[in-house]
Amino acid sequence: MKIGFNEGTTFESATLEENLEYCEKYGYDYIEIRSIDQLKDYLTRHSLADLKQYFDSHQIKPLSLNALCFFNNRTKEDEKAVITEFKEYLEICRAIECEYICAVPSNLDDTEKGKTLVPEVNESCVRVLTELSDLAKPYGVKIAVEFIGIPENTVNTFEQAYEIVRTIDRDNVGLVYDTFQFTGMNSNLANVTKEAADKIFIFHINDVDDYPVGQMRDTDRCYPGEGIIDLQVHLAKMKELNYDFVASVELFRPEYYQMNPEEVIKKAKETTDAVIAKYY
Image 1 (cartoon, rainbow, N blue to C red):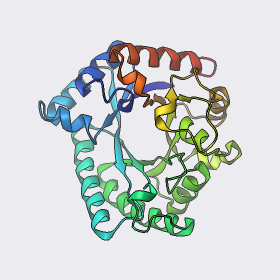
Image 2 (image 1 turned 180 degrees about the vertical axis):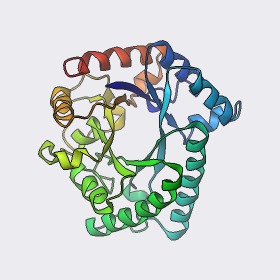
Image 3 (image 1 turned 135 degrees about the vertical axis):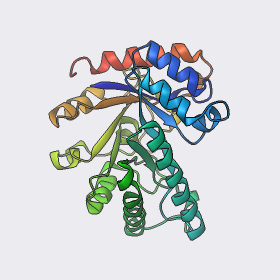
């Protein structure tokens, strides 16, 4: 199992350059680049060619762009903007040889209607993701859909997200399996079958403080092994399903943003290594 680092873990405390330096130093294999802010900041000082050269000359490689946010159930104008943004991301992926773009379903506040029936949500997701799949195919890019385990998101369980990608049935549309998102709305491990596993593109590892289902938020995330998620159960499931690509650590804890980012990146690697050692 390779180890990845998601820039959300330090996005308030470090630049992309610093994240790359520290991730390389502490032996990460992949980085998930925050295209919504960290990459934009980087490009005020450097070019995509510079970034490609860095990856070519170092161990660490790009795993994904994070993220195409709030793509479903939008107004026509908003949806058009989402498609334009996705096309820009495809060009970035081509320039730096990045295989995945993470796509995040809409929160209710970003949708056209607000509270929306599940069939309408799923229909919109299938329609938009199918269009994105068509656009991505010539680039060899895959779309990793990350359900968000909070009540205010339109796709908030593994079961719902898998039903969407199963309906689309494209080789380049799959899922992000995030242990926080899975726990947040009490997704069911029984639904992570061998068939579903074929659609798991990226595994996000993290932990969370002990709040009730539906009350956990990104800011409650913590280092793997320091919260209440039974990570051994999730890792055993990944092992059972022969998933051995990458575990990417993604944290958004405000206290970590106040710390030295090098120390956060170092500890995130150490805690992730310790948790997965039993299985990989």
